[in-house]
Image 1 (cartoon, one colour):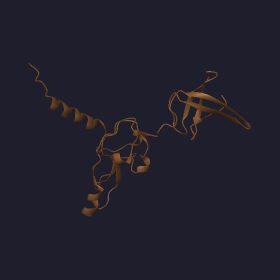
Image 2 (cartoon, one colour; image 1 turned 90 degrees about the vertical axis):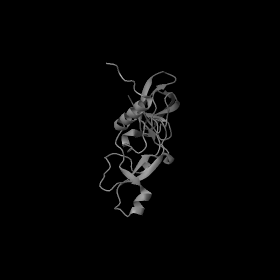
Image 3 (cartoon, one colour; image 1 turned 180 degrees about the vertical axis):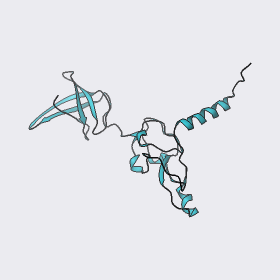
Image 4 (cartoon, rainbow, N blue to C red; image 1 turned 60 degrees about the vertical axis):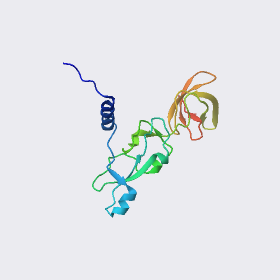
Length: 171
């Protein structure tokens, strides 16, 4: 039996269908403007991408669309509903247009990048020791990361502070 060659457009349709099924649930929604004009009972409001947002990309409000869910449809738990939850965050995975944005699919922007030179502080009572170190991993404010002391080469762990410095504790 001879296999039939698959056409390029049929392959693309199959790949798109597979991607849509594998990448999350669609948001059953309508534009908020249509909701007001139709005098239907108000549904839950969610934010969805209006274009593809790629991993590592900073999420901007222009890439999002506010929609009202069709009455009777409820959003899954842990999806972004407010612009404050998404503005300036970084996509951890590809976010597709018309799909919910799970809270776990976004992260804070890195305050310190991997390989950056940073100031490290050790504070104990009235004693403060300062050193220069190189970050071994990126981190946001409050993250616990590893750094390498530039003078001694010793690896330390510390907390990223809001000003981009690292505070280490006694080990």
